Length: 209
Image (cartoon, rainbow, N blue to C red; front, side, top):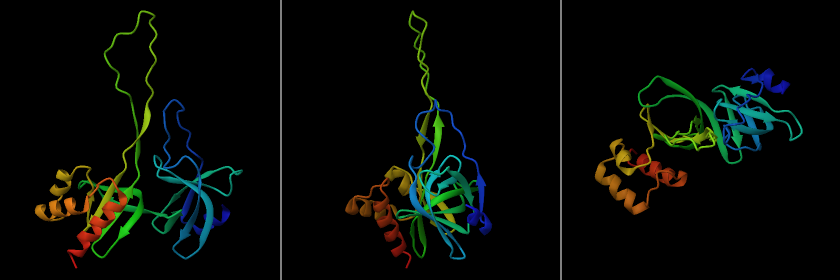
């Protein structure tokens, strides 16, 4: 931990405590996985890592017996967990002001880049207008961590959120409507599937070469 702080590219924090009454968790995976913290100068540190999506911080520890700490990274630090690589990016979503977020690097080509933006938010249950039973006791529904992750396409200095419907995807105008329909049917494009999207972005990139 002291070696990491010497690098000057990470900040150290105590773990955030969450309401136990909320179902689910704010983590990408509940368990810690073997990963690497990679600095731009080439230095690497092995650690057990998990991503706290809500806080946009990684939680790390040396082994399963050690206390975990949270670290905040900057653009010069890469986190590798298994076969996935994560970096901090600044980008605009829907033409808004800059969003700072940790993205999984999925595919980087000459003109197009594909990323996965893991997100979770707490959703409060919808309370119906049903009257309470005669006993006067009703069980209060629990709030829950809900996944709101999206795939992002970076192209021509723009950020496109990949929608889940083909109609909305076609409306992004990344490709001619007829060509999109032809590709979608021929390749059974699944807008929720990483490998399917990688093939589609590779196709988009080939049309620009």
